[in-house]
Image (cartoon, rainbow, N blue to C red; front, side, top):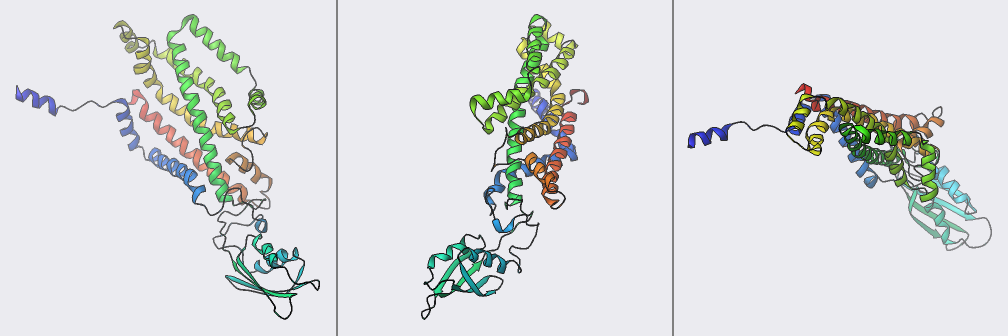
Amino acid sequence: MNSQTDTLDLAPRSRSLLDTAFLRLKRNRAAMASVWVVIAMSFAAIVGPWISPHPYNEVYNNFVGAKPSLTAYPKDDQVVPIAERALKRARVNVETINASRDKVEISIINRTDEPLDPRITRYLVRSDVFADVEMSIDEDDATRARMTADVKKLYFLMGTDQNGRDLLTRILISLRISLMVAGLATGVALLIGVTYGSLAGFVGGQLDNVMMRFVDLLYSLPFVFFVILLVVFFGNNIVLIFVAIGAIEWLDMARIVRGQTLQLKQKEFVQAAQALGVSKFNIIKRHIVPNIAGTVAIYMTLLIPKVILLESFLSFLGLGVQEPLTSLGVLIAEGARYMRNDPYMLIFPALTMSILLFALNFLGDGLRDALDPKDR
C-alpha cells in the first residue's frame, strides 16, 4: 500500500494552460526581451517624472529650443547675455560682469540719482539661471552696487521644446499618459469584447442576431461625434478618453471573438462537453476562451498602438490631453512642425513610440505562439 502511495507521489503533476504558456514564452528570446523593454518603459514612465530635476510643465525662458547636450546649461558664452537681459528690466546700467564657471559678479549703477532698491535681485532670481543672489550697495554712493550669484547647472539631455520645457521629462510624462490610456482602453475592450463575442457566438440563434445588430448600430455612430457628445455633457477630462476609446474599440474584439467561437463550437471537444452536461458558462470559460487566447493576444498588440494613435488624434482636435499634459502623439505632432530646424523634437518622441510598438509586436507574436493550443 505504501509503495503505491509513493508511486503516486512521484508521478509528475500536470501543468495548467498558463504554466505551459509561460514556459513556452520563456523560450522565446525576442518575446522575453520585449517583456523587459515594456517593463522598463513602464517603470520609466511611472518613476521618471518624479525623479527628474525638471517639472514637465516648467518653462525655461532662457533656453527655448535648447539643443540636446550632455554638458550643463548655461554654456560659458550664455551667462553674460542672460545676466544683461535680466538686469535690463531693472532699469540699471551694467558696468562690468565677471563670469566664471559657477559664479558671476556684476557691478551696476542706477540710471537715476536715487539709491538702488535691494529688491532688484529678484530679476536675477527669475531668470532660472542664478541662485543665492546677494547685493552689496556702495556705502559712499548708494546708486552703485555689486551683485554676486551662483550659476545653476541645468541639464537638458534631450533638449527643450519651443516653449522652453525639458523634452526628456515631457517624453516620460507622455509615455505615462499614452500607456495609461492604451492599457485601460484595451482592458475595457478585452473584457467587454471577449465576454460579448463568446456569448453571442456560443448561444447563437435569435440572441446572437440581436446582439450583433446592436454592434452594427454602434458601428454606425461617428467616433468623433460620440466623443464630442461626451465632452458636451461631462466636460473635457482625460477620463473621457478611456471611456470613449474603450466604448468603441470593443466592437472589433467582439466580432473577432464571435467568429472564432462559431468555429470552435463545432469541434468535437465542445460537443463532448455539451453531451456530458457541462454548463454553457463553464464551456465558454474552459474551452472557448483558452482556445481563442492566441488570437485575442495578437489583436491586443494591434489594438494598443491603435489606441495610442486614436488618443493622439483626439488631442490634436483639442478633445484629448490638454496642456500642460502631453502624450507621445502630441509630441510627435509638435516635432513635425519644427523638424526642419530642430529635428530632435521629432526624433526622440518618434523613437520612443517605435521602440514601444516594436516591443509590443514581438510580445504579441510570442504570446500567440505560447497560447496556441494547436502547438502544445
